[in-house]
Image (cartoon, rainbow, N blue to C red; front, side):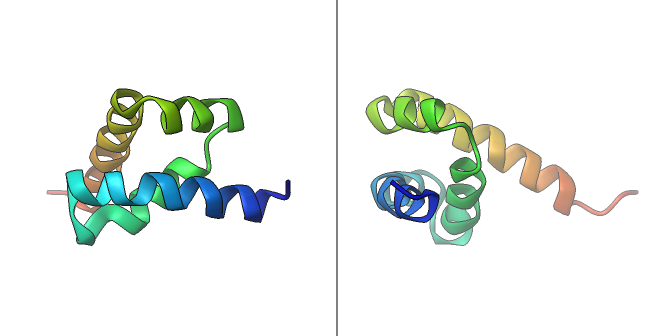
Length: 71
């Protein structure tokens, strides 16, 4: 399976879960960030929502840290 096909299949499975937890504003970006992870980790997250949500929460923290203006 090509990476693009894999990303589409996995993204279709995880996007609705991430959207339900983090809303429309962040769902696409967080899904994209997660799809950049190792294939084995992706498959674990497809099977285990707790692992998915832990990674999505971590990705959101990183995203927010980098979008917050420095004081």
